[in-house]
Image (cartoon, rainbow, N blue to C red; front, side, top):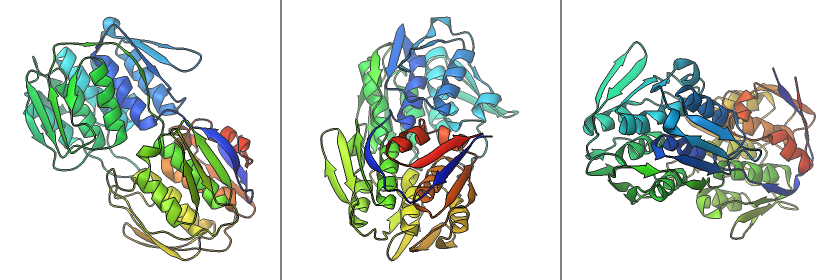
Length: 418
């Protein structure tokens, strides 16, 4: 099993090019199931979850090509199966995203239930009730969701909880439904807007993406297009947080500043100097004092749950006391125990962490429990005194492309070992 070994204490300095967004590319790849002809997705990050999605599409018979730049081209003319098997779905919950588009286009689909998740249950009942409202016949039997519909019908769907994948699944189903579908209490995340932009380019009729009410007028068919994934706002925030915690300066290139307002404000509150261009963000912490910040995670445009662990790591080394409240996932505090192993002063009360900044934290063997937890441990290792060994970094590879190579270019003493 691979690990990361980090020698801390070096301020990061330099530029990093931001990858395409993991949380945008996965629904976009699922959306290729809706397309007639070839469809090309560009700016695709080289990630474990992307590879899993490609295997899933190929397992359904879709022809998938990947070029040297990792641009992915698909063609659905060869599709011969409407099943998403357990052995792939169990490794990546986002596999549920093939449910809506496959049902809408082909009239049937069978998807393994995703099961539990390290950061929370994330049930799929909202996906299923929404599809049933559109006329689908759904059964759940022996661990599989089986759905059929001659043609989905437009409906008004009020989601009782804001869900990103639920919004995306129902959005992809509605574009080929007969009539008008209205999604109420829809997720407003930039990745949802990116999916809607792509679907509109394919010939869909969607208005209101990025707001709580999305209106979709169904069409008969969608065509394959060439589409570029938006930049990854969470990867951007992670590299900027690494600059902040080490007292360095990093400029993120090919970024999307307008997707990070809540995160950038917290960096300013922590004492960082932030400069922004059209497609770049620079964080400068040189000669400044890192200050603790209070954080409460919320659906977009609030503070993202996917940046909670990274900001908690910053608080571990900051001046003062910061309170971190997680409202999205019930189990997203598992990095706390690992940070405490490194000397952090954290008191955990349910989904609230009270973090008192320490002048020094220390390298230690730690274990990643999920994707963003792994990022927080790497950040802590970058500032810790001595050697940190981060185990189970397959979590990291799900969402960060060659993170150790990119950190090395910023001056970090980090390497991957087997």
